[in-house]
Image (cartoon, rainbow, N blue to C red; front, side, top):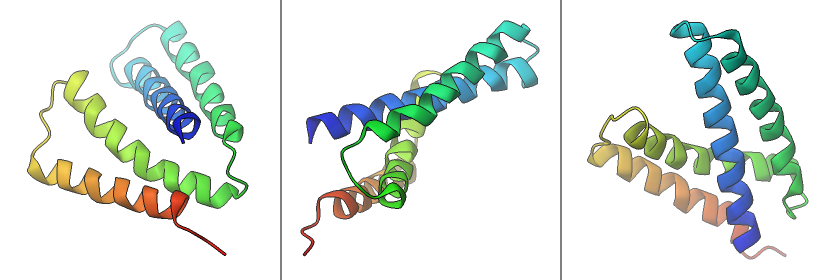
Length: 108
């Protein structure tokens, strides 16, 4: 389980971080190299989830979506300085419950 969590965190940070750098380049007129670096990090994001041990692509990506929501709320709080409200946290918690059910529910 620890490996799965680390990979979800790494993929989430790569997607959010890479996307953020592209955002800075295109929306805030940062230098081209910032956008190129963001693109390279986004390629890494595409690779990281393949290291998961779960055999089902759709399930991994669906569960990752829930983890991404939590990471995006935290990113907005720490990087963009936008304090999440109660409903942001409740929504992220609901998503993480869904992730847990999808990945670790007993199946026959």
